[in-house]
Image (cartoon, rainbow, N blue to C red; front, side, top):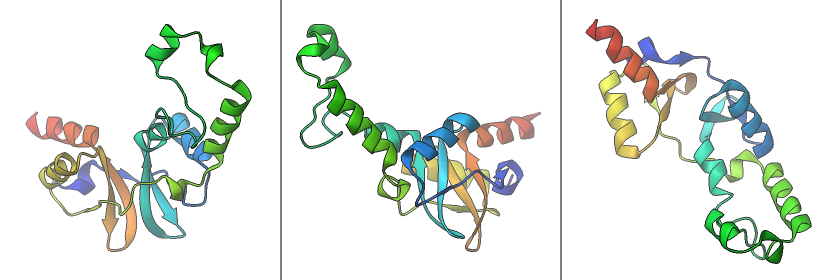
Length: 157
């Protein structure tokens, strides 16, 4: 079975100049885990839920703002170590960052004529959950792990 047989055609994309807030809204609204990032007609990266969540890791918000881990919140009253105004500002700043500053690149892609076994192998070796599908230099689809599983299930019946 080929990638073209299981891929989602015309995938939802986001512009490299869009904000993280816009990308997060697309992920939520479409109930998907990642988006190809476009600069005009050119695929330049991928942004995933994981890329966005990495921005919230303890200590990554800004150089002078430390956010506690969930365990620290339980151990110490939160009002003792968080400046709420500064936290709100830092989280707003994250939402306004451009996708291009957070996206994964270079992007790992696959051709539409590849076998799904090749796609599965590539996903496993690169530890990724989805692959943009290309026809030459043109994005024509996206294939996720779940698409491959559905394809395998169809061929077994």
